[in-house]
Length: 412
Image (cartoon, rainbow, N blue to C red; front, top):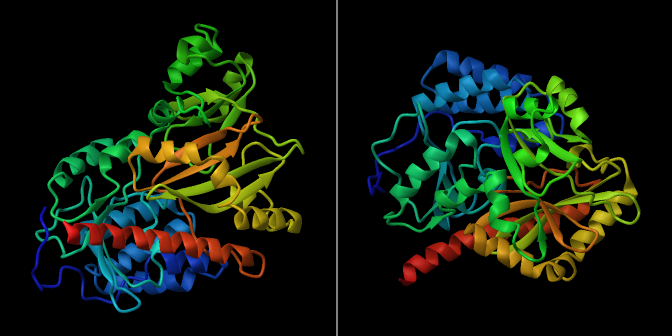
């Protein structure tokens, strides 16, 4: 895999790719995606080699909740064509090659959101099992690895890292660092930092959890320095699917009955509620080591996801989020500067996100660290006018990171 200076078109000359960002924006605003799906199906029927139509259709199917059909359609598209193009919307400043893989909407860094309507020319190259390799790599200024950490992608990430060691263009987010972001690995990276709280996470099988339920073993046999309550989640789960707090050994059997997965992560539960009894969770992106706020969720429940935290229903919560975002650099960033510096150094990633809270003694409580967290500026402006400025600040920082990488190479 080496860059090419060839002028030969490397992507389909069919109708252009609609792309993830415009389609998700329509879904976010509750527009009917059925007419778009019908048009894409007709295009694919007329020309089975119209990979842009098939990939867009896969995205529509994912956004509509048809995951299995979406993934099958996506693979058909990728087997037809592995390289996709979203041109710069303004005079092109930089050509970016993004390495991606097949999977759901959380399988890759959502670069399309970060560069929406920008002056960055975006080439997206998909790699992975069952996806044909291309003969030529398009000319580019910077390469960004967007593949997220996942159990089934570790080997791919490490193989890709070997290839990129001698890459002739600047590389951002080396795959070997992404591969270390599994919950059990990430906690080993970060939990020894003085101002960070990140409880040990253990990866265990269903059989091991069943033994715990049957009192054939004790919790200490599965995970060190941990007592009940614990949290458990299926391996590879997102958005709270299968995530539960287990209060005692007696409750493990009920959890297993409710969650039919074969592998799990378990960790100590940390009660991170604020003095007012509410829980607050933050999504923060580190770009070249500098923190940027994406959102703050406030809830009576410990398991917070922004979409179920009642933010749209509460002006009081939105007002607090607005104040937090406005004062983020001068308050939260200053308070946790040492923790953010340690995350940047220890993970080795140019772009990484954390979902976090604060402990009662003022430490940064990290729930998750990933390079593929979804960040966007799609919330309704009438309800969330305060979000536009901090999100565009984040997007501009991502763009600046790309330009800095290209400039650094030019100066060598």
